[in-house]
Length: 424
Image (cartoon, rainbow, N blue to C red; front, side):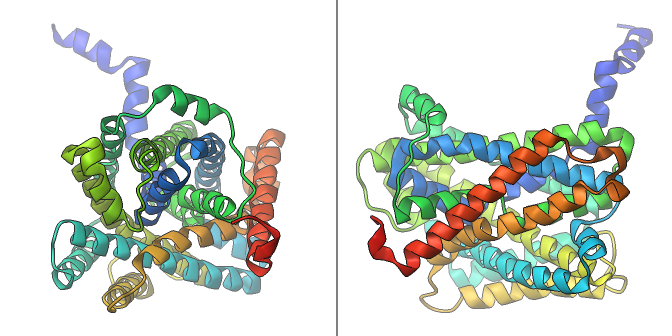
């Protein structure tokens, strides 16, 4: 094949589009997959173990909502060239912004604790001493951000995203009933009980975390994606949402096909990994445990980073992986502080790791609608977005999601205050 043919191939519209997409890809895929973190895997595992195939239907509406949120995030970032919290401060004022930031920092720190809980659980599965595993993990995570630049860090995160394929393998090795899984995916199974609704809110929080809305936009701004590449960023955003949903589906599937069917009581991810051995084989168990470790390390890098972006943007301070400590001292100091504090708390004897992992996701589910309301107010502002405001269909779907999640949250509060009114 001569040079002319090579040139024609390289200059074809399809190849050019692929090259542009690969250069733009990152924020959407990384942000979505990070949300399959230690807390999410724990929540999905418990969902499959407790409710089996009956909860699989939730992945379709969760995918639609996540895809919409991610698409709005990249559109906001590319058009405005500002982070979400910066736009909230611009539109809502400093007081409302600071209240929101305070709630988000608490929520995010719960997630950071969840990630390091996941590292602690993984250390136990692989028989690595906790006093060795946590400091080494914390140091590695900190060095990745301090010594790296955005392009290199993004490449490492994309590799970490690819490792989630271990859960697809684990789900297949579990030998599920594919017909029942397909039926359960398209036919909703609803239950009126506190346990079920809590799990639904937890799964929503496991799929769509509040920090995602802020991180994806900050990443788009730092990557400096231009308006002419908006379509490619949208594909990245939706693709990321699809991959995250598929991974979550296979985690639930693996546990539904084994632990739920055989009615095996499990309380921790370690229990789940061990329970898979006689039911799905050693490979499924090891893949499940390795995926959990990867997810914990991956997310422990991103969530403190998202929090540092959030705080610095809200206060108008310098932020970014490409900036050194002298240029962005608060950004780097906060990133390191969150990691160190999480390690100290997790090292406390008898720390309730499973509760931290699970309820951090429930808290995510509770705070999501409030973040989404702010996002909708801004993305429908023509002064900020011009012709790129939401369509009516977008607003209808997002508005319905807000009402549903708020209703579920109210249900949780009422059922907690008056537990005798509903079945558990």
